[in-house]
Length: 85
Image 1 (cartoon, rainbow, N blue to C red):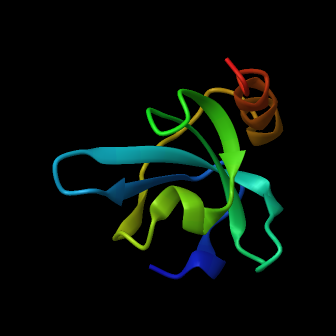
Image 2 (image 1 turned 45 degrees about the vertical axis):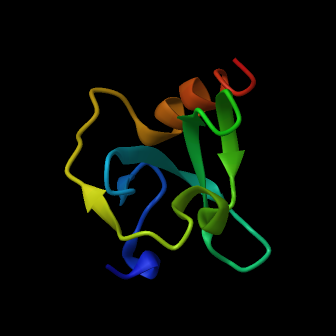
C-alpha cells in the first residue's frame, strides 16, 4: 500500500496479529508529511489524532473499503468531536 494514495476520510487497518486496529485518515499531516490518524486505543484510553508511525507501529497497514452516507469533512468533524472522550 502506498500512503500517498490515501485520502482524508479513508479507513486503514493495522494488523497487530491478535487484533486489527482501525483508524480514520485525517486531513492533517505530521511533521514527516504522513497523514495523521484518528482512532480510539487502549494504549491511551481515548480517541486521539496521532502520527501515522505512532498508531501503526510499523505493522502491516492497508485500506479498508468503507463508504459513508455523509461528506468526508463531516465525518472528520464528527471523529474530532470524540477526541479526548
